[in-house]
Length: 262
Image (tube, rainbow, N blue to C red; front, side):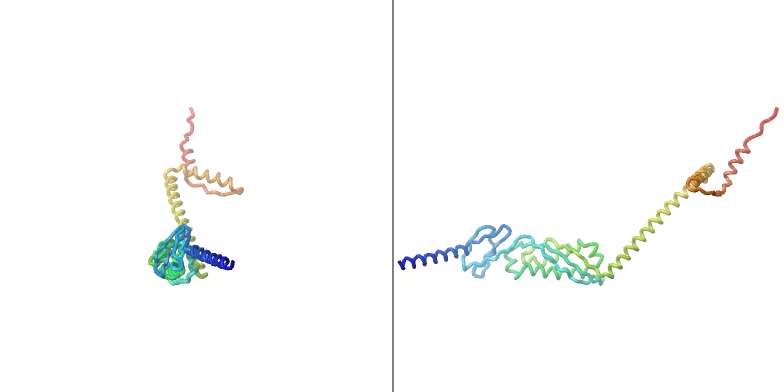
């Protein structure tokens, strides 16, 4: 009886050991994952996705996520090319293209990419002036993406997008920019007003030429002005009569001849 119990105990232990070995040999990775296999310290290569087997206690697997990773670049204080101190933060998007190099070529590819992004951001800001940073931000984004991608390419990393998010300016510079914008608006308003005055003067000049060629038009304009004043003002207005007005009436009176008596 004791022998049977020992046999069953040994068999149970053996079965548990076999199950443990089998579970260690079976690996499953998701569609967006790859398992980089090392056999006795030597790189075998990535496997997956799905179900695959490794040699227990001989092979070691490291999972690598192939999805696009969002990397927040914290606010960096830098001095621009025109000696303006600014604080800028950004965001970068990258993904692992070669799982083997991402594990073998660098200790921690996420942290390494994060550090490269910070130093590159400060470097690019130092080479750009404030106007370029505020107006031509797309060019700075492309320059950052190219620099970071070139430095992370040996690690099997592809940086697809780098975007500068916020630019924090000193308060004194904000006030100066506000005054500059206000002065620019006043300048445009004065230019528009001057252009309007010029166009109005040209029209008045043309109207004066027309009135000068047609004396009767002066009389009509005079009568129209009297009508407008009479409607808008309830007061007595002394309005000088032009000489042309009397000349017109004198001409009419001079043209009439007395009738001959028979």
